[in-house]
Amino acid sequence: MADRVLFVCHANLCRSPMAEFLARQLLADRPVTVASAGTDAIDGLAMHPYAMEVVADSGDGPAAFRTRGLRPEYLADATLVLTATRRQRSVCTALAPAALHRTFTVRQFGRLAAAAEPLDGSTDDPLGAAIAAAAQARGRLQPAAPEADDLRDPIGGTAADFRRCAEEIERSLRPLAALIGATG
Image (cartoon, rainbow, N blue to C red; front, side, top):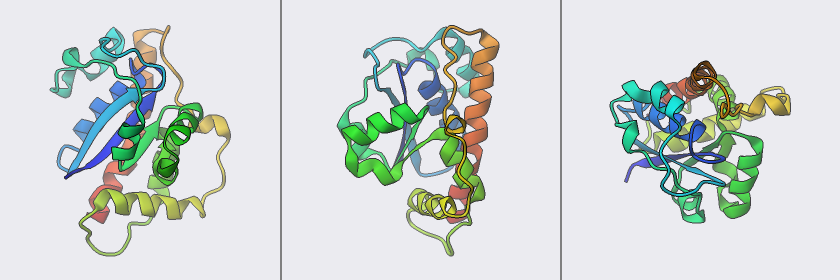
């Protein structure tokens, strides 16, 4: 079974689906599956049109995407949970306390993964090794300002706001992809 990354935002309309589609592209050659959900999502809605535009070239058919509400079993099944904000990280860990050590905001994990030193040797669990390496990096980094962990919600903004959000997500995911590659 492949490792699973779960992206979580508020309504599962823009940030977490964009992260899901961007991660699917970045991790295409890795044994990792991706999914998304929203802490306050209504099941079955289409992705926000601007978010759909941003990921349209992903090749995965974003038009078929449908929102889904967060469930404890999604968190239990995930190897890594990446949230849009600290608030959503708190909701995830309240729903599934066992997920605490593998739940981060997207931006927080991006910083940790960028500073991480890959663990020695190849492993059968590259995502698990990447999480462990990022957790070790936490002790070497200066704490970031709390707002540095949150990904601004583009809802109500322009198409350019959605593009900027997607660029921030991609910047945060690139170190994860590199770390998985280095540990696997």
